Image 1 (tube, one colour):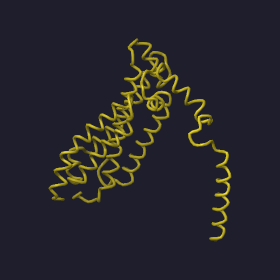
Image 2 (cartoon, helix red, strand yellow):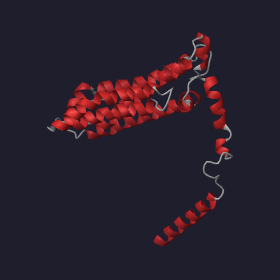
Image 3 (cartoon, chains in turn brown, purple):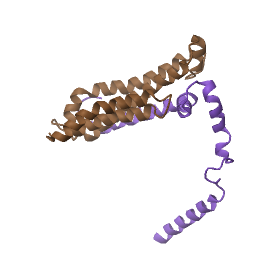
Image 4 (tube, one colour):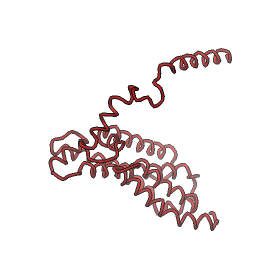
Length: 143
Length: 91
């Protein structure tokens, strides 16, 4: 277990800001530079910083394997479900324009793109964190 | 063996440099890559979709199925790493 006070304090301060920035990048995808892939990786970077500062055991107690597998499947499910919803008004798969014309809500197409980006972000975040967990795991009971 | 490798590298290099002359100039507005689909997307993203970011519009809406495949690829990569490297416990 590491005992470096500076690293722990700085990462404890900066992890929330990194996560807020990641959420900003994800939801800003339709308006400017950003998107689900980039935001998900930035979110996973905050977990990597936590693993460097506090060790793998501490992070895994807060964010377990079970959650990671569930979240990485949830992101794809959000994406595919929105694609399937487009079939109901008679459009093609992932053709968001059919929902917008069926419901008559303006800018719904952009909101659906935002929802899809959120799904991408969840999957990318969970998968990157899962890979980091597996690679930094040295095996044995203590890790 | 080394001579053969050197000859192969030289041959490939000569072919590649030979093809450089046919490439369009850097930033050429008359280049084929900037003439057809790019202008079409720039004109039609705002009336079609209504968001400002053309890259996101192409990625998530025009090429939505492709992006779904990319996300599945990332998911599969994560599952494969978990299956290969994770010790004990369950997935």
